[in-house]
Image (cartoon, rainbow, N blue to C red):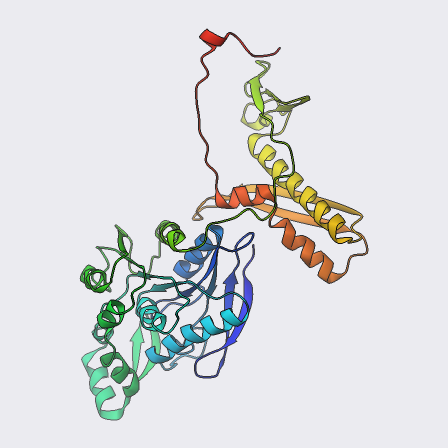
Length: 407
């Protein structure tokens, strides 16, 4: 499902606009993603991790901190305290909208902010940190000595971080010096996941050790191997998202089926015809069709390819689900059709993308169309593709049972 805009009022009273990654079907929980010091809601790590969580049934809000300067004017003033308040304000706004977050995920300084913010968010069931510092004094080590001198003497200084200018005030320095991350996480008493790369050149791996030791059980640590601090490689960002989703699933409600499976389940048999390199007959009960590959890859082009068959299942399930829903609600849906295209997308995990285009004919209101589209995202085949399935394989011994193939 495409991300939507979610607006809320920050801790300081300003208007913030985030992106809400909503899962297919009924969510098992909601999360807030807090970006790193010099990143933003649209950084690779933020986007990929949020989308991985949404595919696992966890809706995610990602937004730019009001004090980060991201998306705003150059030289914006940084404020760690406002970052913490923004997380709490976001959680309050999500709860008011019926999406109370039960998971906080923070990257780098955002990880420290989530630890501090979680103390006053009793509905948060778990916290995950990625490359987070164990003390905020570490941030000051990235400033030049002359900038620190200016900050001390004049009360503010312009510093450059990751090639971008930021205005640092003495209040930022005082806030950093007054916060004890390790003490906060020791008193948190929530499940904690610590993720860190041993090759992190920005925040050393020793910070992960300190956070892990300060945390109470249940706590977990996952090494990010060769990842850099900003998770600039898509594979690393995808891995983090998958691991957070798997870990958090233990502390969130189980996924449930939104709609029952309508059809009577029957086995499907695919057998080579030997009339071409790939041509098969596909049988299920009294129904038979051909499957094949295009001539361009050595097939005869006599039937749907395997991924086209999967796409056909998704398209058929979508239309049937919309029809059942429209009939039950008495909506004037005259005819529905769905086109599904499959493609492989690099740097995305999983790499398969099914793009679905729906056409609804009939004098439907805008609200009725929206509700039909919403139910389309919950069709059983859709949820199977998004959430994954268990596939088991066994070998049938034809030497004992005889040849069971039908000609």
